[in-house]
Image (cartoon, rainbow, N blue to C red):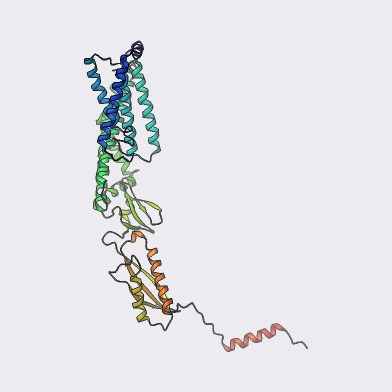
Length: 439
């Protein structure tokens, strides 16, 4: 498939100038067009969002297009000799398409697995340069020479001789296995989490995390085998890892275990309104190490899973989404409280988002120094939409009712009494300070 000597490459380049090369070029263009049409039919009329590994954003930037083109090119290589046509251009097209498949596969999988990682962009560019560099060495016939030189560079590791070529090939094989593991895990995770919410979303999130961890572990074992590392040596590594978890990684291990416990028993679910310490918000994501809680003000808190297991967490959505909200108003003494209570309850019931059942209630809760304190209590069914806004609406409705009914809200008043004896002493002291009278 590659060219053994630069002289052979020059000969093939000379053949490209012959008239028969135009026929081969037309066939290659037809194969590329056929590949595009097949991918277009497989995708359907609806364009993708750019996250599809197979189709990409514009069909040609996915994995499926270069894969189909490479398969058709291989089929053409088998058919053209029987028709008496040359294979010059196809011998150049096959390594180019192979490099394109490797680049598209690695870039798409890494972008889907780590969408917000800047390090992955560097890795993608590195893979692209390596793939195109290998293609150039392949086409120019230098690759066999480089591989032989790499075979000559070797050293002894334990009881085995390891060459630089074996190490490079093993590393590439390990990277390919890990990319495939990421691809499979990302595809299965998208299938598990597609179109579900609530408790099912939390349960499937736990299954997706466990599945990804299992696939990455199996991929790591296969990658180590491809590099040439004896897997029996992992027993020593496992013992050292256990000691490390017991001492230095105790908190980290506790967070991971707590994450699986939370997802398994479903005491906290994605979408629940919770209050942890003084922070209240909706759970937006539960990972194996931490939980993300987003407040109504837009702030997000990253809470370690161990904290959610070992401390008290108030879940406002676990059994009943209804939340009791109350507000207090002071009216003047002498107000007809009995009739005012009923009118206040009726007005509160008309405020949007106030639940009809249980109905709002108003109670006389205290005899204040300035007036009578009335506490209005009402229920809402959607605390995720905020409590301050509905409480403000209730306060405005109560204020309009009091103004309409002529009920006064008393201001704080203080009465100061001055005793008569104290007044005489103050007058006498003022006379002494003023001095004798003047004529």
